Image 1 (cartoon, rainbow, N blue to C red):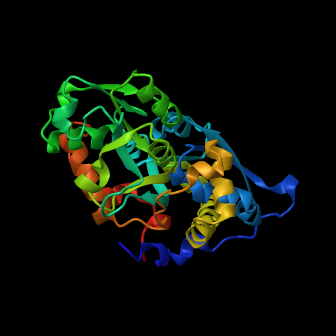
Image 2: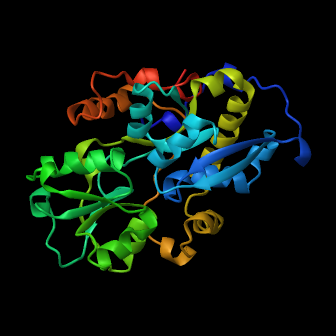
Length: 319
């Protein structure tokens, strides 16, 4: 898993027919995204002009979570959606034809991580048992945040059925905790680091790395129909996005990198200080993704076994 970022993608995926370079002739694609650290390579590729070099104009639509963007993908309102593996697999299992075409973010192999359960510093919440009867903010229900929150509560002495899960967009979670609208929140970076650095919240637990280290969490999906009808556009999108991955990995922590992150998260560059920066990847190993599919089955998000390999298109598989 450590060398996934430098793995070679299928050469056929990038055997592109040259696309027009003038602004009037660029192919427009619409992408549903989320204003979190996981989507940095996409924003990099837009800012640095990698998509235009590949003949594409990318229009983005920010959402509260990947599950929100998938209906737009199914309807054709967007061509690509940044989402989480759980929501994509759930839609695919329901016959919506979702396929992962590009990798995105992985979690850490040990704490600290890019996402964690947080509460007020004096709340005394350190385990799932401490959350009995309390309310936890998740960005959307039945997604990867919701699933791993439940798994962590059960693994640390609590009962996930004893909690109330309230949907709150990531940028508003800190205010929800501070305002006592929720007792805890499963928060992601850069908002996680900003809240901890300001002393507004403290870490209660690290569900991702404690349940499944190095988890493929965020990725880009398209529909099988769109992939079949637009193979060159899909290949161009993945090629340009992967240039954004390379740039983000090589320039993480620089002033220019911070400015790009700040531009779409609405956090000032100084609030990004101390941010845990993990590498982004170009490919996904099905064996690394399969435990998530199995966890979905355990928590009744799937009615039968589901193979992670069936979720991944050639452009995101290692050679």
